[in-house]
Image (cartoon, rainbow, N blue to C red; front, side):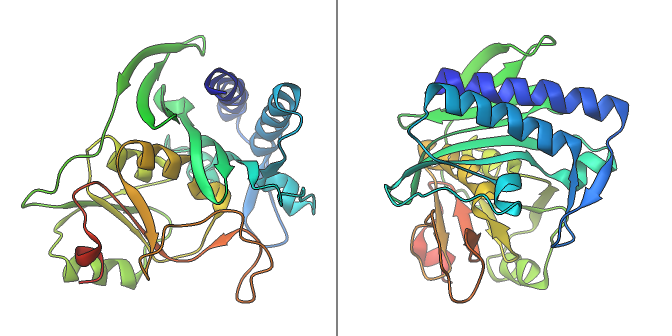
Length: 266
């Protein structure tokens, strides 16, 4: 599983960087969100790899869902794929975009990879072990290092979305006495908490499951957690929601081991 996810993500990352160097052609989906040929080519490569090695496991992928292609996930085991998370960062020429692949079982992310091809690094989690790894110039895995969330200290650091900041986020930081906050794009926010560089990632604007699943898998394997505002673990495979679209997430708090439920509800 781990090797296939890594190989698929690296192939997608290589394709994305080739398009990034040439300059992407941007068009827009019906919901007005941007998409590029990099999203589409990366998703094609990932779907081909997962279909080759795990043909019995359905795959929910962002661009396929946008095209109306949604597999049956009633068996409880499925992949979630965001071929290019942080498309706005990609278009703007920043480096904070990622390739996300996650495996979901009974609503929980149990394995995942987040590859940041422009940063020559990535994160992977399988069997409750989270790692950070380097990516070589020829898109191979380099040095690996186990990571884990840090304990709660006196001074707290948050990470927040670069493109989706909200007044609720500012209020959360103020309510919890958090002065230090790093703005960064894509699922890297989960990874910063997972490797102990930040304590909490509050999200008070819309995300989809493919945006969060891989980073959430890494965070949970590193000893952290992602919970909705009522304290329940963020669940995956949400269909037929009365209040929102299929696979849309509610607001959530992703945090390290030192962040208690009491602090979350403070």
